[in-house]
Amino acid sequence: MTFKTTDPFFLLKGEIKKLLPSLGAHYDHWEELIQTTNTANNDEFSWTQEELLKGIKDVNWYCNELEVTINKVSENPDHYKIDQDELTKRKKFLKKSKAEIGTIQKKMKNPKLIGKVNNDKKKLLLTKKKQDNKYHRLDEAIEMDNQRFINEEFQEQELIEKEQDDELDAIHGTITRVKEMGNVIGEEIDEHNKMLEDLSDDMDTAKGKLKSAMRKSKKLLNSKDRGKMCTIFILIIILVVLLIVVFQ
Image (tube, rainbow, N blue to C red; front, side):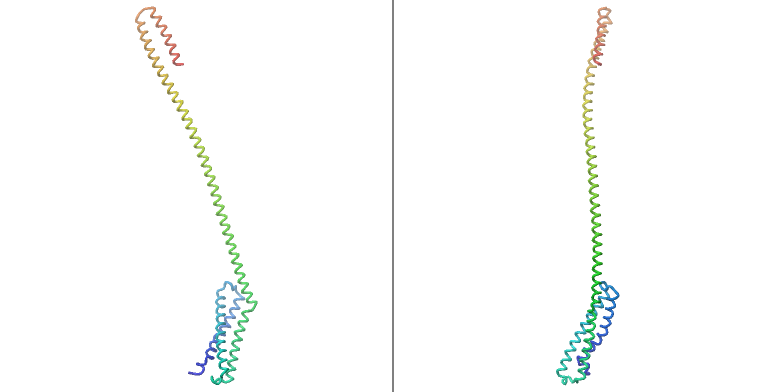
């Protein structure tokens, strides 16, 4: 096993050298997306920024660990068999790595870039607010239409019920008048029936009297008495008078 494979410096150095180039590429793409897209609703920007922040965190951790190892070696270089030139090189690498990561972090704090990201967020919020207001107004319009429809239906129903009530009142009035007319007609029929019964009785009485007169007349005719003839004549007159009285 060689010295390089056991020295933690080279392990940490290898990780930092792998991360820094990809970190720079992520930053360049991150800046490009800010300048060319609306970052507020761009999934690619969100992923790139997440990877960039994660890479910066990892590189800072490796640099901190590297600094610990360098400081430990600096305290007793003979023990680790590392001369001053090697220690200087290690310190320069650490300084350079920190400078590169610091530059990326400083660029990310650029007011123009931050302002663009914030403006994108404001635009998105404003757009959503407008859409919400649009949908809110649409909901209000629909609610107003529904309420107007319900009111019109209610008024129409009230009008129909009023017309039905008026028709029922008219029918009730007609039935009442028909009933009254029926009662009057019934009374008149009863009166006419009574009159017919009285007339029938009078006819029966007259018929009886007529038969009696006819019998008496027949007896008188059978006898040749002048007095009887006069009596017949008088009876005929009486009969005529009775008929006149009956049919008046």
